[in-house]
View: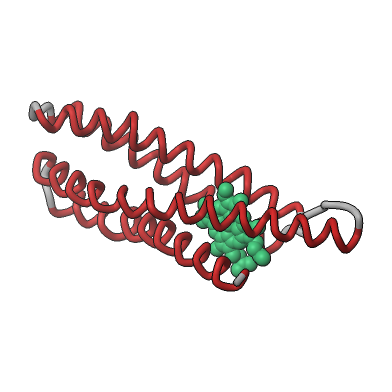
Amino acid sequence: MIDVVKLMHLVAAIFWMGGMAFMLLALRPAAVALLEPPERLMLMGAVWKRFFLIVMVSIVALFATGTHLYTAAFRAIKAATGQGAVPLGWNVMLVLGLLMMAIFGHIYFAGYAKFKRAMAVQEWPLAGKAAAQIHTLMVTNFVLGWLAIAAVRLVR
Ligand code: HEM
């Protein structure tokens, strides 16, 4: 059972991290090279609409499976040793994971909402500004995601 939970945690992480990798390293640079602002913004908006839904499902899955893995191991360690000391890297993942989720909340409810409002009235410069904010926050989450994964693998 715990192996299935771990697998689901990995699948959700791969969808979120893989999606950001594709977006930041392939899609966005190609859109910037080939398209002018109105078309580029429309493309990014259509992509985000779909990708952000995937991220929301991933977040629910990561939180549910992550907290399950954490508490199950915490209880097992406590039962075996009398102390509930999980590896430091797990606590780093917990904190960075929650931070990533909060940053995504900001992307969605601040940046993306602003972007959609600007697009609805064809305010391209304003939409471009909101898109740049979304990009910066997504880069931040991408870096935090790798730090969390490195911590859970390398920090004991
Ligand atoms: C509330 C947030 C989170 C919690 C509580 C959490 C908890 C955990 C725990 C306890 C493990 C260790 C499982 C084990 O080795 O038995 C783990 C592994 C992992 N987590 Fe998370 N996690 C969270 C968020 C995230 C996020 C946001 C990502 C993606 C960026 C992520 C990616 C991974 C990966 C790839 C592994 C597997 C590492 C390995 O193969 O050893 N987690 N997580």
